Image: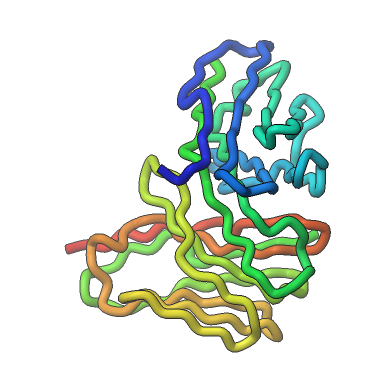
Amino acid sequence: DSGVTQTPKHLITATGQRVTLRCSPRSGDLSVYWYQQSLDQGLQFLIQYYNGEERAKGNILERFSAQQFPDLHSELNLSSLELGDSALYFCASSVVPVWGLGTGANVLTFGAGSRLTVL
Amino acid sequence: ELKVEQNPLFLSMQEGKNYTIYCNYSTTSDRLYWYRQDPGKSLESLFVLLSNGAVKQEGRLMASLDTKARLSTLHITAAVHDLSATYFCAVEGGTYKYIFGTGTRLKVLA
């Protein structure tokens, strides 16, 4: 158990629907990252939060949104789902908040992932 | 935009052989990471490389970083079946982005 909890583990839904994926970071970690892993796209960076604030945005579609709550858990909302959204969605957390400051390593701890299947 | 590329994408090798996985990135960064992903599992951290010339070793794996060439290598010595997995490098770019490479799927054959 990595300490990062993702729910649900598996989700099957239909095109056009909306789902919410949830992530609880490891205790003490303030940063949360979301990634999408599909067979032909590798691990795509979606978005990063630090202590409730959005810090970086990657290739996240407009149909997708996320937030980090005061208790530091994060949710990724996927709407108007398409077949191509089927993927494994990973959440990761880390304690180092800011790139470029200090010399500390920023090792990500990953959750087990949420596998989304859109039919 | 930060891009991170790995090669090869797929690697099938015999037990006992040596090989190197390459990771190139497109922008200045002094922080590079290697992760391992077993089939159907999540990613786990392998190495952290924080400066030019850094070298880290763990068992049959050795990682190095050349920030001037924007290149990291993961060298496998005398491969064994247990090393079969997908290996990712990752780079922290500007504005907090943490970008993973394309991954190298390694299969070690007995």
